[in-house]
Each structure stands twice: as structure tokens, then as C-alpha cells.
Image (cartoon, helix red, strand yellow):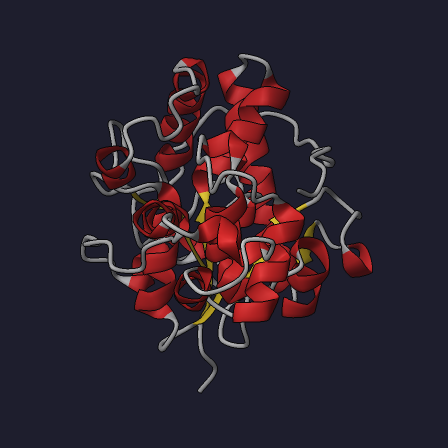
Length: 299
């Protein structure tokens, strides 16, 4: 029996890009978001789709580290909220869980469904590349015709992650914990940049092994920069590691069928499934002419 193909969308990252391009036009923002999600679904012949969003309010990461993402303003959230409402009105199944970010919900959905469906994650956030593996496909939206074979998306391989970051996907959280991530206000370890982080992980394979070695190496060894940083570095790793144990609501895969979605423009999805399903709500958003190209660069 052929497994369903589930596209899990990092809805927040797509909404941020749609809001930027739409410049305050909510109808256009909803249409742009839907074009990206629908285009990706068509490229991979997905049969089902679910969107994961950030939850309003602080997360467990803020509880661990109060200055996490503290430089981000509320203006983008104000622009994203009406786009989210419009997207949900199309009948797209959406998930948002208190105290967790959308990335955590994406990863937990992936863990929940990977045994009963083929899973592809769509995100323009590099954090989710830590899940690139044989069991899960991860792709970014790059624009119509800009992906391989004329696709709108770029699927990632472990080799491509290694080429871009210098480490394999499972070590991305450790890499970012060591060198920090400015966009999320994660400081990392003092005097450890990207190059040093790569060298340490290639040499020691894990943060725990590097921390153990840091107490015995010469002070001239880069590993010595981690001495006395055990608790701090473990905290950084908690911030950069995406959780897969979010308490998700009950989700019926059948209600995530693409054929249940009332896409802007009036036509229902036919990407990989027969039309005519009535599963789920199908309230419509404002229709309008489609935009064939969304000029979002690959991250």
C-alpha cells in the first residue's frame, strides 16, 4: 500500500516572508503563503499538509534564558497574525502549542507521523536542517523554477548541510550552541566562532566529549576555551536543540488532506489526491490573481 505523503510546513517562516513581500496587504500575504505551500506540495506530490505555528507568549526557552530573542520586536508578529488567520480559514490544519515554538511542533509532528506517512518538512529556517536524514526530507522554498529540475523548493541532503555548515545535520544544534546564533540572541561560548566550532566537533564529535577534554588539554588548544563552561554550554544546547516531545493535540491525518483545502482563487487542491473530499472546514479567503514567482532567496 502506498503511504500518504505529508508536507509539514514551518508556517511561521513562510508567513514572515509573505508579510515582507505583501507589505501590509493581508489578502496578498495569505495568497503568497498559500502559493508557497501549495507549490511545494505540487512539487513533491504531497497528499496531506499540516502547518505548525509559533504560540503567542514566552516559551520554555525564555524560561531557561530570559534574553532569548529579546531584540525581536512585536511588529512582525502583528503582521503575521492576520496572515495566519487567513491561512487557517482555508481549511489548512494548523498546530500551535503553548510554551513551544513552531519548530518544536514541526519536529514533533514529524516524529508523530513518520511511521505512517512519508514526511517532508518545508522551512526556510536553517534550524530544522538538523533533521535531514534518510527518514525525513527537509526542503526550503526558493521560488518558482529556482530549485532543482525547475522546482520551487530545494531539498537538502546531509552532504549539502555538511558543505554549508561544516558539520553533519545531527551536530547542527551543537555547532550553534558553540558559536552562537545572533538572530536568536544565543551568545554561544566566548571566543568560539564558526571555524572553531567546526574544528571542535570534528575532533570530539560531541559537546560532552569536548567538555570532558577541555579540563586536560593545553591552554593553547582551542578545546581549552570550553573549560569552566560546562553549565553554560549545556544551556546553549538546550536552546538550539529542537524538541520532538511537544504535547500535540489529537490530529487525524485524514483531515489534513490537500483536497479539503479551499485555496485562495477558488480551486481546491489536486496535488496527489482526488478532488471532492469534504474533510475539514473549507471557509474561503478573498480570491484574486495568483502570483507565479515569490522571490525568496535560499537561506
